[in-house]
Image (cartoon, rainbow, N blue to C red; front, side, top):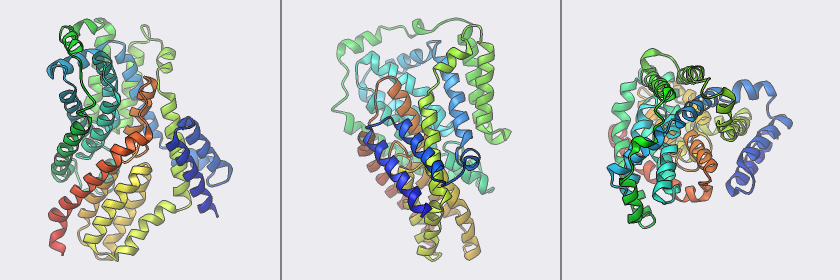
Length: 429
């Protein structure tokens, strides 16, 4: 009974979020609280088990850093420099922004990257009088593809790396970056073709852009130096995360608090807090509770164990099923709880006689990370971009993104299947 009730609450909430008839934050929150009221889980489980406070704290910290840094004009400066490098042309700009997003998402967390780049894109599109949504969609897709390449790029990879000690930072680069490069090239080429007819910059706006001196947008004061210094220190902490063994959330919190302390005279903390995307944070909390309900009643775990029953321990069949099931499922539900349920299941395969389960780990990583492009709910970075866009009155529509994102996932999983088959599985057939 509880399983059916949890599933009904989840499906109804999801449908209402998709239709966008009501505010998604309210819908997700109401769905999560309904799980509590009907007794799917208690308040202790909700706050201690299912809400991922690491993700919430990381987002909150980065929003503070971006809020203070944004007031220095540095994002406008970067935006104009990038636009001038490509001559103010719309499609080259789309490709460059996508490339920067992918590389940044591989070296940093993809959520961090999109928090930095969305303000830049919003500034650029306003200057050039072109629609921002195609660029925002490109950022989402590029962040998920780029984040697949490294251990620290996407939360599922971090979880897998922590669970499997021999899969190091270098292992992820060696095994995943080649296929990520291929997928990124094909997908961004496709986006350029899709949006090629829609994106055109008028000559007058291009000339006006080329005449702008980007330095004029910088606020040359103490806050600029402090903000850039703390931001660089935070990024260095992210990059050195595998070696320092300090989690990303701690680094981000330290950076945010340090910058608040250094700039409290120029920017009062209460004013900075007003700039935080509280709607996005509370939407995450509601979503975590909704998915937590499915996890509590065992639906996610049963789906994971069903893989083992269906494939009967056959490695190639298991790898392909994990890749596609994880990819499709991660497009509609945040990939973190599903990966958490799959990790112990893959470990159990070793008890059933599988001597080499590494192909399963790579299939899980590819499916979870690339599948995040399926819908706006598929990954944390998607929701962050949508939240920032909504605040700037540039709505990323759920169904509009679905039309682009889901085919991207299918193509990505198809290419990944070929890669996994020929690199890892052909010797077992």
